[in-house]
Image (cartoon, rainbow, N blue to C red; front, side):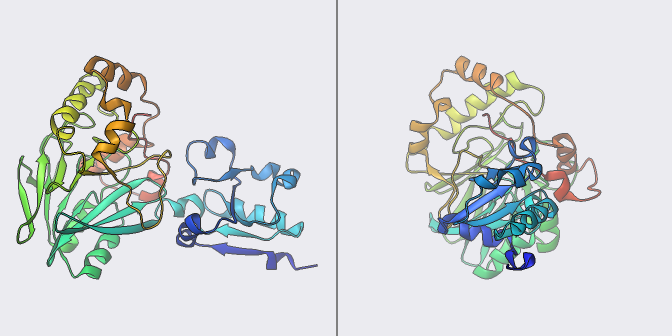
Length: 367
């Protein structure tokens, strides 16, 4: 009989990212309890709770590459040990969902004379961007792992000159201030959100020159709806970075400031006055994506605006219907969102493990 330990190996989250698209023999088993899995999971996972695993061996395929997943790795290892005792080999995901929450991959392409690099934080559904041309770049919506953005800039030979957030984030800790401290870049934010630290206020039409005739334009300051200071940035006529105003599968929720009806009206107006008049060919780059959006290696999480016009019912509703729909369909708010908002606003210091505080889906869209 093969020794039990020889049937158990490990896989990193980055190795798993590579397999998700390319390995049709991959079979993921999440051994957490159903209430843990239903709200936050890796797409395509099969849930067999650890307590039921030994009695459910008939559900475990013997001809697939098995990866066991849990919160941090301990339960998955127990599950792998159970399988090994029955002669079944499996991989344990190192660090579990905690590690998945801080796993990034990137994809890049050319838009409007600039290079756009999209960083996808797989476990949170967070999207951030490095936009560069010549020797300069800007970073939009950086997460707390700021070395990710430094590495992208260095790989392209860019100096980070400006750091921008599209809004006061409620689902994850912003890395904007730390990145500014490390890079010496200028921090640009909307004064309509309640930040309690020094920054340069944004104004409509503000242009950030990346190279000759290549500019990132502040398309709209205070496109309220998701937050009072939600802001979008436009790269020529080619692309728009919409933050949490417009997603690929929905629009931003209006209720996090406890003014759902007012913010829903504002969101409708922002969409119809600032976004929908743009060309159908303008590519929409959002700040988040949800479980309904498929993510593939080397493909942007982005869509032409013309495609979203035909797939998102929210974009063709009347204002009254939109407001009623938006208020009726907001569900659970992001975990620890009030504390995360205070930290991102500079009203509270980050104490303890940021990764632990951020665990869970982003929940920033109307579902």
